[in-house]
Length: 126
Image (cartoon, rainbow, N blue to C red; front, side, top):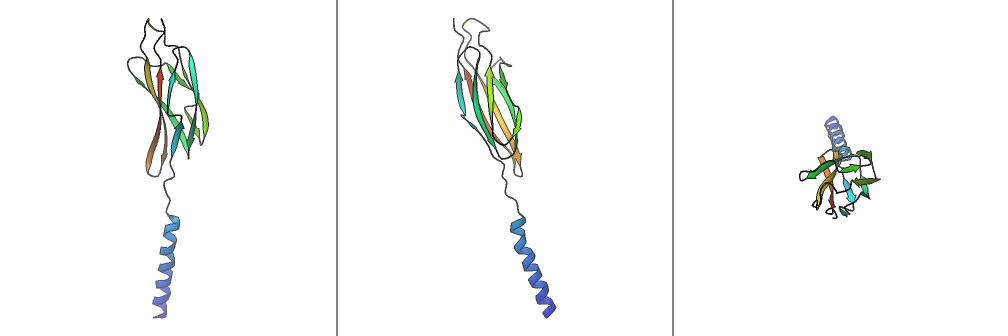
């Protein structure tokens, strides 16, 4: 009986350790501001990316034009100021405004989390 009590107490002690071994998913990423409007000329904005891990950035264009945005860092650890630059929107007379998303993402135990920067560039000036 004493041996069973010892085994039982050992199992209880092991079970008490399991919650300490569980890991919470610390993955988080954010970008501030989350939306910007740039003028039609060569322009840029600086945003703050905050992440609990290494993040990456991807530009997704809306509409037929692409390649007009550049991001100073396409990946990095933790928090960082990132410059998002837009080339002049002067490809055609009365060129319409254009839009793109810069998606920042990081991956944790529970999967990938994302934060989005909405970039709008004003229409070309006459």
